Length: 316
Ligand SMILES: O=C(O)CCC(=O)C(=O)O
Image 1 (tube, helix red, strand yellow):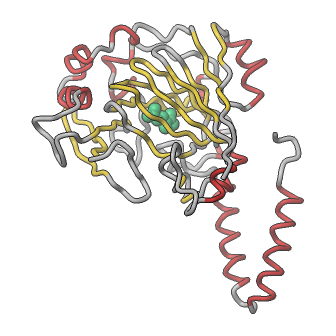
Image 2 (image 1 turned 60 degrees about the vertical axis):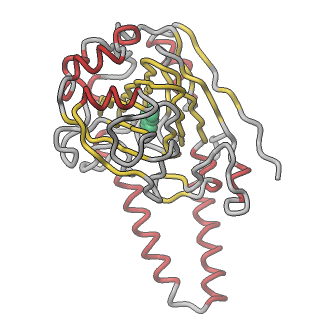
Image 3 (image 1 turned 45 degrees about the vertical axis):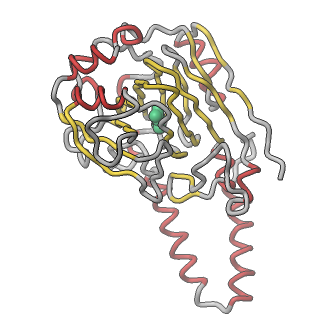
């Protein structure tokens, strides 16, 4: 089966706030921003500096025997390590001390103090590192939602998912490949909530997931200092090319009251979307009262109505 050609993301050098907001942001497309000042972190955050400065603060990490982490089938476990030990382990290929296997892979996605209530913010949880990183102030202060430390073992691949807020993913050290899919291609991604069931984006099982070949693949390679702008709802899948450190910043693109107040990760559907999905589930339950022939007919009519009323015409 033919797969769509991949598209490399556009890159922009040395853009300022005005240019970003005027020319780039309104396109609602992912782009790579190069040459921006992200602070001293790109040369300062060596393995040695990270482990010495981070000290013994406990962090909760994902640990997996394989490099392709799978949220849906849960092929990893959560474990806790002191930050310094975690960094040293994540940077090595073979471990003397390990949880599941000597080649296990690690992934840190930093959390708030109480992840059910608090939001990740490196200024709060990692104040000793916060001064090293400069986040481009391309959005208003009150739009800020969270800043998240992301540290990966070499080769670690994170599942394809979307978030509901706009995002600057700052590659601080190491390199990372990011594959992205438009929100428009959601029908081809076999979603389970905010995640795609198709784990291997490079060699997908097209017998099981035939529509995946219709998803248009966008791609970029991030190097230290690069910033990837990921607009809300764009799916992304990352592979760390060697040990790497990133920080991502989510900010609110919609008015604050549109978001789920209990969301500390930036990935819960906006309240109106969650309510609409609940109502749809109730409508589907109601259709079950009909015999198959009628259920099918009215389901198709409902789809047509959704398409006519809710699909956007200006959405490439
Ligand atoms: O860099 C990564 O490992 C994942 C980044 C990510 O999922 C995000 O920024 O939302």
